[in-house]
Length: 72
Image (cartoon, rainbow, N blue to C red):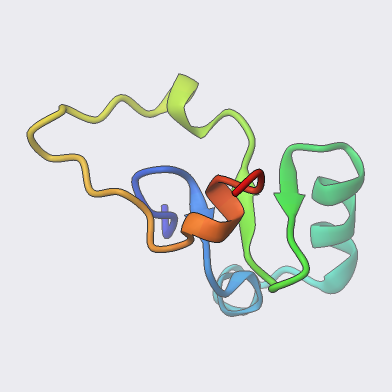
């Protein structure tokens, strides 16, 4: 996958083009809440950490901290 260790994707349109998807595919994923979108254009895969285990010594925190911690 092209997401970082927390499940954030900075440029979902690039991945969409790589896999041959269209805008409707992304809209379906957003509509069914499999991915969550932010105003910045970043998306996060909702259950990323459930399905992808990363060892603590290999984990790198996401660069999208504003989206990760919206309360700050």
